[in-house]
Image 1: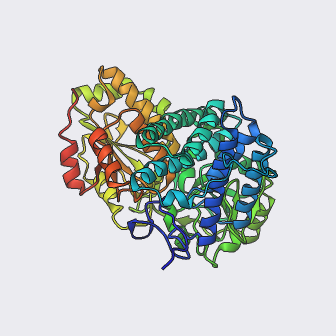
Image 2: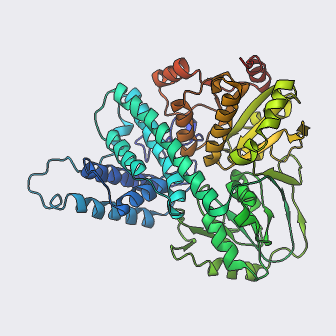
Length: 535
């Protein structure tokens, strides 16, 4: 049977090999998947046309970032907006090669790339090119969030072009592997840029306890990652009797001074993103999606879901670049919210969650942490974080955290934390055992914390009593993993399954050079990790 589509960029891909039918596991149709491939091919064509240009116009860079972001899992399901992006890519390409469309003897150097050729490549070449493509898709999300706050980097834009160009070329494995690691290098810079953008705009995060109770009266739930959208929504709802609740990866927003100063930013609604179709089914309030992860809305609540930025879904009201959230506000007032306060809990029954342990907050108590390690109070650190998802087996992360000894500290980030972030793990020497660093892009904070501890102990990060246990779902996890590999971090545990786009040879290379291991059982993995001692 002929495939209707081919997509294997997320962890839940059908059969752990690829979605090929009329609809992908994420809910996108085969036509949407085809348009995302065409969009990617048009961006490669644009990169080909721009190849060799010493500088790129601001519009070129922003278009590439926006286009790549639109192909991320659970972001854009709207065919019309994808076609518009393809048209924009072609128009932008024409500015570099104005004579191309009417040329009587086309050379092919500036043509769009047929992405179906990538899926048919020899498996090792396909694997490395997929790592590049999926890595820059994830990286584009971070670049987009920094860009809307006014932070850009010409070197990053040039690299996006270089990486896109590489995907369309007949390069050997050695050249492609070098580009794969470069994705990690430039993603580190991208996360640094976003960290700078967020902290300069909203202040440095500080620890905060966030309630899961929803107060009576009108409210709006905001999901995604975009802190600027939250700031604008808070401004536009001020004094209107509407409370705002975060969802998913927006939870860390409560830790930023310029956001938590608004008294109507009340708390957090819901658990992990993959539970949204159940948790939003009878919600008497609108939901605003600023980025992924959007699941196809059920008819029971589709009339109250709004999108903005790169997120789009057919039939939903989309808030444009003018950022007038009036339709969302009017819907909140119309629905009216709950008549009485609602007492919700996390997955494990907890009534509150904490967040805000970014690099500045943790490094401010570095002396306390170092002393706790030297005294033996803290035996080991575990970074347990990454993307969550619906595939069976992700309870591994809950059980891992529950079974971690009482003299260990759990660092976490991204949406995977919802598996355990409502647990009360107690304290060590006055410090919470569970430290939520923030969103997935706050992997930058985790890197800064690990580097500072390594400096304090006069060792390498790989020699610290630190183990990384990562869960992955979509492409931002890919670029973060590549950043860790770029930094030479070894002995990473990855799950719940390994990426379908990793060929046996590429996987062997990663295992041999970086000691990457698939997760097994919490008991077995804890025993192996706790054998590592500070040198």
